[in-house]
Each structure stands twice: as C-alpha cells, then as structure tokens.
Image (cartoon, rainbow, N blue to C red):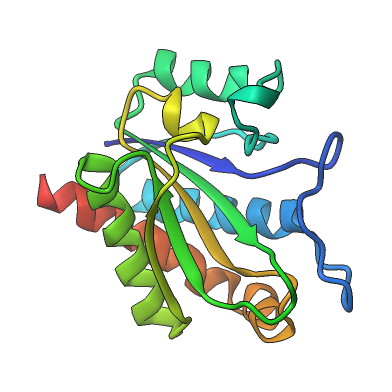
Amino acid sequence: MKVYINPGHDQKYDSGAVNPSSELRECDVAAGIGAKVMKYLVTAGCDCRLLQSDNLYYDSDYDDRTVPVCEDANSWGADVFVSIHCNACNGSAHGTEVECYDSDGEGGTLAQCIQNQIIGALGTVDRGVKEMPGLIVLKHTEMPAVLVETAFIDNDADAALLENKADEFARAIARGVTDYECSL
C-alpha cells in the first residue's frame, strides 16, 4: 500500500494553532507525529511519502501552497492520503476527530479505522468522523483521504497528550491505516 502522509501547516507560511500557555505549535506536533507514522508504516511494509505543507485552505482561499500536496499525491499514485493536524477552538474543547470527504465512502472507512485506534489507544474524547468536503486535501485528492485532528492543542490536557504521547498517536494512526488495508 502506498501511503501519502501530510503533516499539516509549516514554519514558513502558517504554523497552525498554538497553545497559549506552552507555545506548542501545531506544525511541530504534526511533523513529529507524521515522521513516526511513516516509520511505523514502512516497518509494516507500506511505501510512504511525506510532505508537510499548509493545506487547510478551502476553495475560496486556494493558492499554490496546496497544489503541490494534492498533485504530488495524485501523480505518485497513493492508495491513501493522511493529513495530520491539531484542533483548536476555545481552550475547553477536547478530543479527537477524523475528517473525510464522504463518510459513506472509502475515505469514511479509513477515517473510522483511524478514529477507533486513537480513541482506543489514548482514551481521548470521541468527537467522531466528520464530513468536510470543502477541505482541499479531501476534495482534490484522487484516493481515499482523511484529515486527522489528533487533539485540541489549545486545551492544556490535550496539549500534554500531544507533547508526551506523540508516539502513541503515531502508532494508532499507523494501525488505523493497516486496519483499513486489511478491510479491503
């Protein structure tokens, strides 16, 4: 299986959400988890490609920063696309959700596999699988694609999980991908 891993945001354009207490940045968390996911999936026999970029823009904000990620995944012939992020809201929201283009499609199946593994491994609040068809990385990829909102970086308890349990998040995401592969 060819797995395209896309840690969200970047240090040049947009670091993503930031924890107001610890200054933990989404781009750094996503990069660390993404690298570990790749390591676990390669060990499991998957062919992986990783590209970090800013990719949360909706169509109205589409620009050249997103194009290379979708085009690269499509031209490489990825079987699945996994974008890794941290959520943020108001400091009190917490938990994990995985977003997909269509919850009834293959992306929805992949999303549910990853969601189940993260909830089971880390005990985060289950915010479910959510349809987000306006997200560029879900709309403009030609393979089943998900955007994993690992936990809320602006919530101190979730941020502690992101800092201290990155390996557990990575293993859970990798297991979710292999669960999906086994379901085919």
